Length: 239
Ligand SMILES: C[S@@+](CC[C@H](N)C(=O)[O-])C[C@H]1O[C@@H](n2cnc3c(N)ncnc32)[C@H](O)[C@@H]1O
Image (tube, rainbow, N blue to C red; front, side):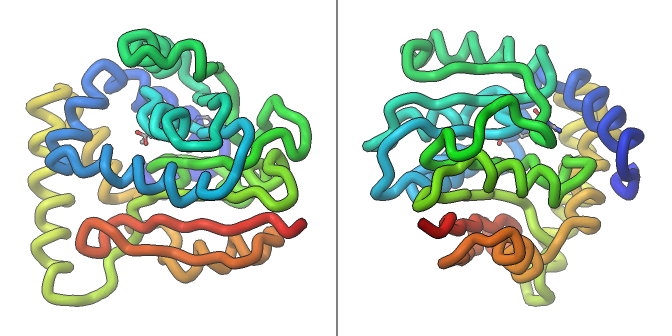
């Protein structure tokens, strides 16, 4: 299923996330021992550093990365967009609980065709969502389009593991234990089998950097997290 492309991929991804939305946060916390929140805070800080204005988080899910952006110095307002109304509804409830409703707008929308004008945001982020895009370059190019010159794009994603001592144990964890855990917690083993499969189909960290450079970003860089299983990328739109 992870090898699907185009509309079939978009439909598959939408159905899958609609099924697991209610248990999505719990599974993230169980799978990463809570580290996903620390990685999202880091992504928000890295992407927004030194900038002032509004921030956008695409494919925001239940909103964690959007909330981290909203708490960064210089960020006046944050918008989170996801194509699933189920996710947006959960994100809105969380924004209320966290007292961030006034600083965060959560909207239904497709990352391939963002409903914003060119240069509207000082920065844009994507957390664990690029793997799910039916057209990755289109989604990245939309992130770049809506950032103003001098602004920054930041992405956080599971990337294929380089060979090394930890590759075997991490692969065993993600390919065997995560699907079993996902089956128990969400009743949807297939969704958590798709997860490690989709990583195998995704671009290596250096390739994703090259994609950001091709889109015109400068000072592109990346940082490996989670024993090399997660990569934080960033790049700046030239003035
Ligand atoms: C793995 S979740 C990541 C959610 C959140 N960013 C996080 O880090 O926890 C992927 C999210 O991408 C959303 N998504 C997938 N394709 C999308 C698209 N084309 N436009 C907007 N959202 C999309 C899904 O609905 C889902 O909420």
